Image 1: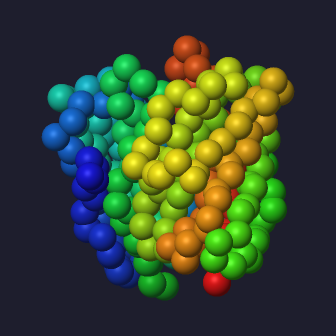
Image 2: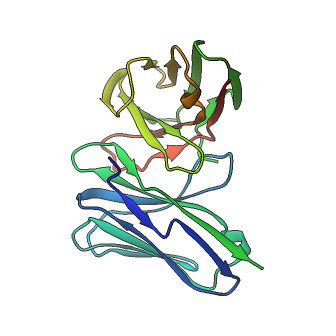
Length: 111
Length: 113
């Protein structure tokens, strides 16, 4: 059972465009992480959000955790070819140290 | 660099064989989780070890087993390999009770023929 749904699954955009990736669930999470993964490598942590309603910014990336801690979004401003990769969200199940991963969003930014 | 290392990086096995994958946690981390990532999908939780004991398991059969050692390094063992076991196997370490996030190793790519 996939508890975390990401959308869109695939995204191909031109350099300079903005985009938003969504991560939705019916479950409440203690925290939520966003990762970026390159082919053949492990996921690299981008950010962890813990508090409902929290917004974190990392240069051109803005992450938001839903008020109810069931969903999250990643917004990229002025995308660059270097942003290309697989973006994964992962929620920590409440009361555990276990993470459930989303289905992933594969982003391609064209120069 | 996350400080989490895995070996080997790549491995080819045939159906029915057994395989052992290894993971060294980031220094000071006492919890390790293993994930299976099939091509084009997100990682699926296999199990987690905390202080050398299994602490939760995903929907994987008993032929997937693990160990955690006193130095917190870990092994994933898979018996009776099947073609569908071909995947990237990831380990991630964290420090429990410290609100420390988990950090992933580079993974081991397993191909079962």
